[in-house]
Amino acid sequence: MKKRIAVLLGALLTVSALTAGCGKGDAAAGTGTVGNLKTGVGVITSISNSKDAGAGEAGAAAADLTIAAVTLDENGKIVDCAIDAVQTQVEFDETGALVTDLNTQFSSKQELGEAYSMKAKSAIGKEWNEQADAFADYCVGKTADEVAGIAVTEEGVASDTDLAASCTIHIGGLQAAVVKAVDNAK
Image (cartoon, one colour):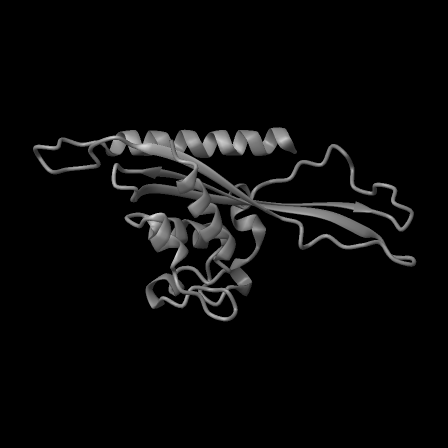
């Protein structure tokens, strides 16, 4: 699992760096992004989906990771952003013995795409990866403070009408990962 996450992070950084490099333009012509660019990665981990084993009930250790890679311009504004998430769950029986095969490969939500099967339950008919991509696009042109300040409803979804039209998933983890990526940018 660590190898798969490392590969994902490497891929996100590479894509982000390549995209940012392609965005450099001619200062005299006023095109593209000019100046010193920084790239950063942020990973937020939650174990809130873990559950204890009980009398006759299996338990599970879960680690959910939200990963963001950003490229920043010299003013600290995001010029490119990529987001992914991995949900892992290792089950064990009531005696504590592992039930999940140790060779299990966990795919990221971007890798799963349509196979994640959120579209049918989505009020806007979009899959998780489409909504995460929409959130990433919404972050472009913003600073970390602006991303952190994106208003959310009591349910944890975007309250901004434009963002909510393309992203109805909970965005707290996405915001935190993007802010952490900005803070880690070098």
